[in-house]
Length: 472
Ligand code: AMP
Ligand code: ZN
Image (tube, rainbow, N blue to C red; front, side):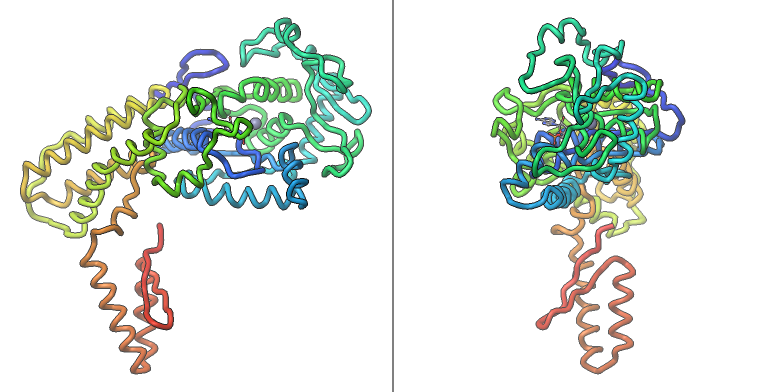
């Protein structure tokens, strides 16, 4: 049984998906006006880890992450760079895809863009207007917060306290300072779409209500994002979706703690941030993921270079073992002993930790205990049967690699080890070059194609032929 701390109920609850084994999960994604920073990366990685653990447990997760591609910050950047907002957003969407791939984050099933869902957004706003939850003032449409009786249920904020605290903003013609924009009337030079209320663009909160409903339905299992989004973003999403559909919006709300620097939140506006892209020039993605996995997702985490360098150091043991495992599997020793080893104990330990609200620090500790025990077994027995290493690899593949993302067995196989394999490939390349010289193209092509079939790709240049391993 998996238990999840649900922000909505403020307690740990047993996870019961609406329609098992299917799980529908929505995560608030980036506003694509710049490279994302390592604080954003923490939220993306933790969401990825949760998704992968659910998949490890046999759930089939439909995972949706929105891309906010129309917004004040994007417009500002496009003016600074004297280009279109679509040029800005496409550039940073491509960069986002490159960077999350480097971080070993599994792709979402859908990355809905706001600009590709304008009609869906207009439809939700229209239904809110029709039901009396929204009003139009001269081309600006606002949500009437006082009309939604459950407003504040996620964040625990009370309407009267909110009202007392709200500043009356200048130049805003809305009825109540707490009301928020659903549709923003177009200003000179801004991108706009036609709507029943005139030319304009959607507000940020309504994007997520419209796109989550479109891709996951009116009620779905898990909604996640950074803890800064609890209020007002997620509170407003609930108000919009529940008013429009008359149904509960989301069953489990998960929020990620902030990545701080010197106990201040890392953010673009404070200027105290490192992009994930820059961090990955100095540290491996596995080190970044280990550093994050060693703190529970909901707690704050203070960022420092030491955090990453000590994670990098911690990985050495894991990398050394991965290389040894790959080597032993290559050697394929079918004789020798199969040391007695309690794999079940570690599997249970890992699952018990992750079942408890995705306690990755505990799960990581189990992995390091496991490594210690495997090394001990290897030291105590001289001649070990390959089966043992196959079992060790199977466990680590599913857990440390598949869920936590703190090891990459394919990379471990290509650095240092597998010398014999490399020599054999070089030998085949030489035979192919000889065949070509003799104009035996049938044979040279056969060697190239057969190597390709087993994942070795030859690259011819004028001077020589080199090879690389195609990633699985
Ligand atoms: P943004 O591009 O600012 O809309 O943020 C994308 C995601 O990153 C959202 O889920 C935010 O809540 C999250 N996020 C932003 N800053 C941080 C931070 N310093 N630590 C953790 N998550 C963050
Ligand atoms: Zn959102």
